[in-house]
Amino acid sequence: MENIQNFQTLWFILIIILFLGYSLLDGFDLGIGTLLPFIGKKKEEKDILINSIGPVWDGNEVWLVTGAGALFAAFPQAYATAFSGFYPAMILVLFALIFRAVSIEFRAHDEARAWLWEKVLVAGSLLAALLFGIALGNVIYGVPLDYNMEFTGTFLTLLRPVPLLFGITGVAAILLQGASYAVLKTE
Image (cartoon, rainbow, N blue to C red; front, side):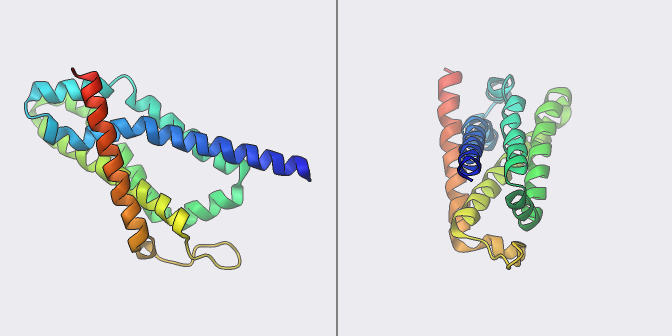
């Protein structure tokens, strides 16, 4: 029995490291994406900012996928509860991340509509950061579950004041990360 608890603790620590790694590494990308219209006034400046995250942005997503896979492998009940309860929010996050990735790629190939892809990049980055913060706020604040460990709320239940504050804090954190990264990489 003690070995099982040791494995659970080890997996829990590993999952925290994976999600923390994702938030730290992809936070720079989300921050650059959100700050793009504010710190990149000219096309050349925007190109420099996007090129600064170009080599690493897609690799950072691996941390998120690995963390979700580790959560599924180690704690399937927690995975099932989290993904069923947060399903609408997770779908929004997935679309935000997909649109963000598509916008980075298409911006380089569609010069005529670069302005559109920049707006999609900003929206995808901002929405992903906000929803990740809201999800963390709900995990910490608590979500309504029944005796079968099934989510009993609605999508609006996830948008209570404390989780919303976490979401706003998450956006502020990625803005700080993005600004710091921009200063470091574009001097």
